[in-house]
Length: 343
Ligand code: KG4
Ligand code: ZN
Image (cartoon, rainbow, N blue to C red; front, side):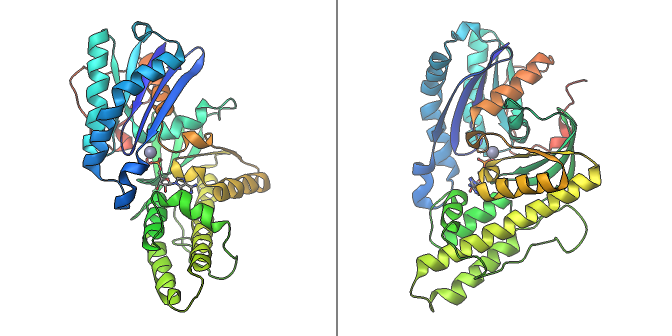
């Protein structure tokens, strides 16, 4: 079964062709970072317009790169939510129109399910059951995953998502967007031990997260020190490192707790913050020490991409799950509403 996947939930237009027999055949990505950079964050209306501009040429490009004729497609998968409604509608409209024109089914994909299944695209795909840590710009959650489509939420952020906290902390120090990669790069020249930030909600039981206080802590540290220092770049780097260490520590502590609580020997990590090298190293060390396995998607499939959508959509289509061709999208979509593949 050959599926074209379309991702447009936020600020990347990602398309890919996945073949259930041969694997991923091609994927293309257009990032809107340049469009939103001057505003310091995503401007929803600009995002929708940019998706509309790039969707059709990118669909032609990904098909050409994959060597698949459009008439050989068995279905079109697209991100139907959660995300920015205008951005989602752009992808939904193109996906469903194309499916209608080709006389093939269109399948809605849940953006977070897409992220969560991305590690399964790798050669050594993790087996079920596993604990999933999903850390993106919009969500931070821990789920107990017994099979595809069966996601039991065991922890989540009560306020900002981890990626959002990276983005806001970077913005407040006058750094670019998205803040995660910028802060992570800066942290490499930070001096360990200059600042120590709290590890929110780790001193009490439970698997929920809260990152908004950490962002305020970073702001206060920045304001208290920036007038006193000659070297603002070093101060930014020291804060970036203290912030990153606090996030990495907090996520690692909760992951270990989640594995203990569920008795699962496997952890998978997905979403944009999963690209953070410090987090990847820390979880690899922990896995070795405490004898659990940890899997990540390759770096380019941590952040938004079409490959994860083509793959998740293909699994749904193979299970006979697809939707009528009216164009629909959801700005909010609880993961608990998803159906297991086996039903
Ligand atoms: O998964 P994603 O592409 O989009 C959402 O679904 O939200 O995640 C984007 C988020 C942004 O907040 C970005 O700052 C963060 O992931 N991010 C990182 C890194 N790369 C991306 N955060 C920390 N370290 C990174 N290397
Ligand atoms: Zn995402």
